[in-house]
Image (cartoon, rainbow, N blue to C red):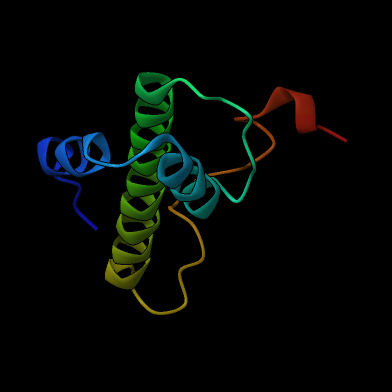
Length: 89
């Protein structure tokens, strides 16, 4: 998912405060009592950016896992107790 910030801000800027509040609830899954239009726009965009970053991270992780040789669970030497002193039994 790519986000065109300019296009989103432009579209959100044309919305009324009640429409922005509804859009905020749609994007975040949370209700808001804010009536400040610029704040609502900023919060909506910020959440949309966070969602995009999360999706990109998930996709990158999936791509790395797909590139691993079959049967390899983690990179060689990773998670041995010698590399994580707090995990020593």
